[in-house]
Length: 416
View 1 (tube, rainbow, N blue to C red):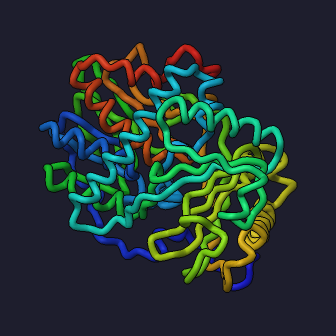
View 2 (cartoon, rainbow, N blue to C red):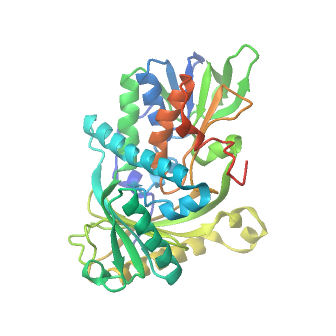
């Protein structure tokens, strides 16, 4: 264990709970029911309510205490994978459509934050994707060409010129100005939820949905804890990784380890400072929080360990503690000129990945009363914003080619 570090999720440790919402203590009727208590659910609740629909939001835990609390708060097209890799998986047209949606999502989140009275810690940032080995360097050189030909801001860093801007070595890097952003995800989810409440959304936390019962009358009944239920016309399941149990689609899950330092006064050897993502495995990501701390995550531990015989033999706690130590060691090695680096918080969280790296959004072909929003990975916040817009349009019956990109049954996915 890193000396003096607190094993606690950073965002909920440094923020007070701004609002506590009641649990469901009566039976309700509504048009739209949103299952979830994180950013995806809150944004969906806000969008549906702004469109005039009677909406209820049901979170199994306190608002923002699920996957949202463990989010890095980083937003960038550099997040989950390089654009080059996405093109190889789904084709150029689809990949660039996804990039355009993600870019628009950052703009929309910025606009939302400007409208809120609460400070969500939003700020625009530059973004770096770097590779240490030759293979990753080749990928990023193709990435540089792809970005230039698609009008995306890009500067190529090589082993010859990186040292002018960064103190850690790289075979190649793509530096893009202004394409990323950082936010406090906990403050953001509460600001969005508060805005939804002002639009008339009824919010209940600590209220788990036990069963979704699709009746013959065209209505759906959500059977909840404490023998309460919600009758609705339409359901959006936005409950983090728990959504996968109903929608399917996760190719794998992993336990991501994160460390957060005490506030840092200067960032020598870190241009910007910018968002940083590594190319290739094992992946790492780094950012600077609104109060000038370094947040670093990655070096995932396969979640398979938690569900097999191996978990009975190996104690997972020492494994994650070792990862924290490895992250701290790598941080110090990357930025030897930054003084007084002291890790204050460490924590781990389970995260999921789809095969193509995109979210799962929309309805299954056999059911037009339940929509899914499975927004995992390093781009989860951006996918949440995209989900809120596209799922509303789907409910309104608007034809949208973009939603097909994320459909639960998209034909290029290996797993269905």
